[in-house]
Length: 488
Image (cartoon, rainbow, N blue to C red; front, side, top):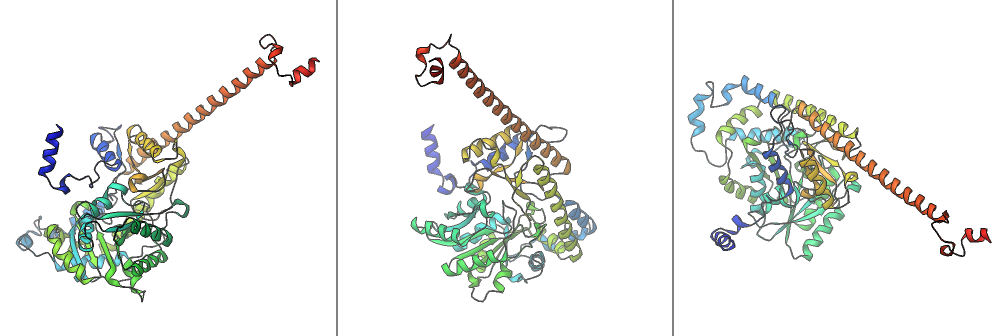
């Protein structure tokens, strides 16, 4: 068997046989558990509830309504079939001009129209996964390194690590962020990671961040953004900003794009600044596979455009979205309503957890929150975290993601996705968490009582033996005992 496996490995490439995809991590284990036993309110009410998938299903009704009212936007309807031939024929990898203009306008609107994006710099890719990998192919050689603030999605072996490392040969060096300052990215932490990389003889080519953060659900403040830009300029390395959750902000502070930050900085080499964007999270359409690379570097933009031929967005999708995103009324209403619904869902979940003593990192964006379960760990270690996670997955039947899979430097944190389910499923999930926590507290209380009773009985038994002369001979009592002195 071993010989057969070895021969099979020799027949395949190193990319095909390495383990950098990360499919064996706890992150994917949770998905497999859900796939094998998915929750359904009537057909499988005891199944696993998927809370590890960051999907936005809260505004499908708005998109459906627009499509019903605009049948000519799709070539697959009677109203739009006349455009079928124009859309079905070959187009080069620049994509539809109308689509690139609509995407650029949408990105600007999401950022509060503080900056205007140039449609000629929009480079398409098949989702954010393809966009992240494309930008890395443009910037690094195998063995080069990128700094990534932790916790990052989803940590040690998954998306950033998978997207950036698997086929490019890139190395990742975590920038450890701490709960003591709400996981903020500090200059000291960046310098420390940079120095570590140099000690390991790694050639650091840049730093990649997610803003808003996945898994934290927080937006970077403008001072942190300026610090990041200053850092990469001083080191002469790249800054890649993953902004795929830009339109999921539901509370202050507002989202600030790196494009806005650099336009107010005089001493900034714009050739070092790059943006990854997607409609998967902001509009809840990951199946459309719309990813965007936007670079201020002409050479990177031209290279990325050539490479985009390996993962284009279908013209049918471009055609539909160009029309949808050009509808200012729809876009404005969608962004307002999405923000409102995300805020409500976030409030329901976090307040429900608060009632049973579970706190979460204060957040204002994203499709998830960062849940603090440190008090429920049997031991303060990553082994204790995984043990707790397996109980939550296999007994409570909730697929939440452990912080260790996000390369979090502290055990006990979990990412919980809240926008991929209906209200009824939310209530079921909250009831399961409440029941679990209360049961855990009762177990701890009973254990404490048993320990107290055992200790009390042991003390009582010892006292009885000390004063019972029929059990303890006087010769066994210390000559310094008050009992001896009392008898004499």
